[in-house]
Image 1 (spheres, rainbow, N blue to C red):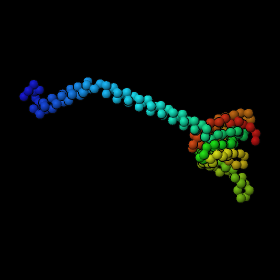
Image 2 (tube, helix red, strand yellow):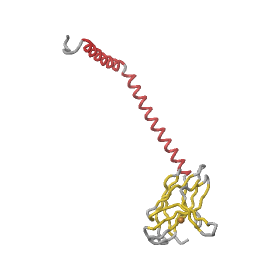
Image 3 (spheres, rainbow, N blue to C red):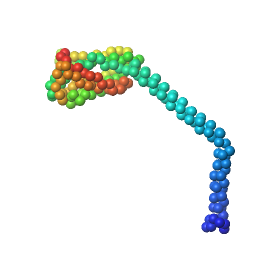
Image 4 (cartoon, rainbow, N blue to C red):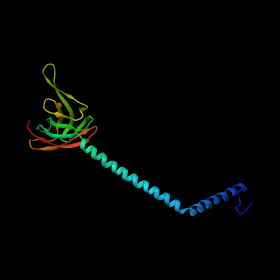
Length: 187
Ligand SMILES: [Cu+2]
């Protein structure tokens, strides 16, 4: 038994080894301070250039999407009173080389908002069909107009008088959410 009382001789040996290991590591660090510093500097440089690269990439991406984004123009809605229905019309332009999809429409002006297509049935009666998705082909315009595509405002929550305006958000697969101001006017 040595000074480390209560331990077996092999345990004592392990303690000594561990102690030696720590000393050796300290000695090595002390012997090559320059190499360690250099490695730290290289790591720092890597981090800085990575940050710069991602920043430049972000600028490139935002510049691209800004030019290619689907555009909503001339948005207008039919007048109506609280509880009535109304419809919103506009012109969509997709200036990009890939098709975009209109997938949703929202406004807090109405209880429910749906994308509809008006159609004449075989008996000559106008009907409306709810659409889940509207494709805007690449490099094309798509018009939402009376007798065709429209955003249906079901059960208005406030009166819409000519001259009023309200925000409408259209959600596109590629362009994301775009909010436009809709002008209320007589057809
Ligand atoms: Cu409708």
